[in-house]
Image (cartoon, rainbow, N blue to C red; front, side, top):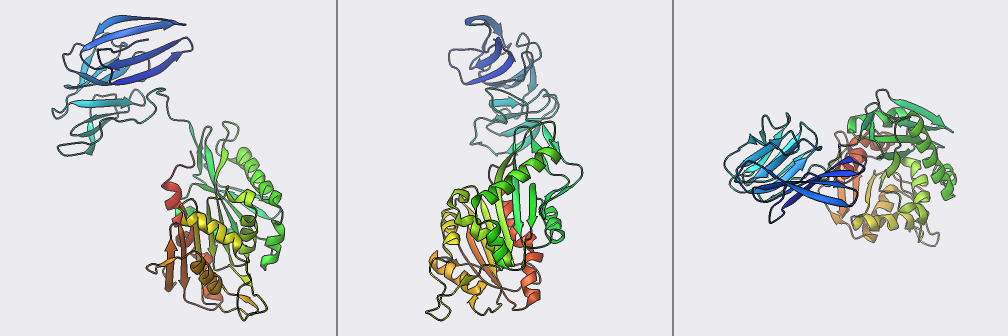
Amino acid sequence: MHGLVSKRIRRLSLVCAAASSVAGHVGCGADVESEVTTGDEVTWRAQTSGTGDDIYGASFVDEMNGWLATSGGVLATKDGGKNWTTSFVGSGYPFTDVNFVDNMTGWAVSDYGVYRTNDGGTTWGVAAEAGLRLAARTVTMVSVATAQAPPQRYELSRAVHQRKYGDVVYIPAGFWTTEGGNYDLIIHFHGGANVVEPQLLDSGLNAVLVTLNVGLSSRPYRERFRHAKAFTALLATVQEIVEQHGPASGKASSELGRVALSSWSAGYGAVGTILSHESLRDGIDAVFLADGVHASFDGRFHRKIFEGALDPYVAFAKRAVNGDKLLGLTHSQILTYGYASTTETARELITSLSLKPCSPSGPDGMKALSCNERGNFRVRGFAGNDKDAHCRHVLNMDELVLRPLKARWDGSAGAT
């Protein structure tokens, strides 16, 4: 091993050099040493940094190229620590840490701010200025213990369309995955692929999309997923298509990550049935229901929703309220006869989950009438009681469904 050592160790940087040797660098103070190890034997030999400044941090990308954060600036070596030169002085504040992800790209942090270089330390620019004091004392862009390069990224140059049993699997151009990473999936029930796919592109979501249509009423959707294995079979089909036609096909594996369900109109039959399977519920991260949750009435009472009819949605909504999931629901003013309208089911859910009023808003061309939310569960009501009003809920999926989903997925760990 090579190392930078003193009486107190502040930082450690290890770089895998080979199966039988590791290069490591530690430091605090001006004394510098190098360690060489083979098997279980460890020896250290003295080196010098050529500076009397305190050493607070070190970063090596291989056995030869490394940088030191010192009280007087950033030092660099190209020969494993035998010789050091000044890379950056900065504004006179001590540098408390330095980290490089490759020979060219690195960051250094001082009490004044965070600096970045893209040319191996020849020139530096301010990445984050903090005035007279910076709260952060260290900077880590990759694991210092491994100092490995970022995983290979694979991007799709042309869109992929695959039809399986009437389902349309769409992988948009520009969709990307990384080696050994996960991909996100959106499954939309009821609504033409020609309507949904362009909106996915506009949203900027990096996800695979399945558009599924099986009938004009909710019954075929319920029947399709009456057994949980039907949904797991759908996921397996998507996985097969991603492996065969995705950007990493033949190069690296990608596994399914987060899953979102979206429906419009009769498509709620599929969503409700999938959510009724407790074994599937944990694997669903987000659900959006666009003007399409209906329920049967209890015949003994006038327009009273049958007890338990909304239980699958309530179970998922509770987890959304707690912040574990995301649930969005929209409804129009369309009246129904013989079964509960989307306004009535929305009202029932608002009451059951104790949602609070929020400021109504919506896309252009849709008059927002109401908004209620709690945690990650939001219900929005819109004007209109005709076919055009109903269709606007799917024609505005970008804003009503995909943007909230993008905000969630971009703000949390996800596809890699």
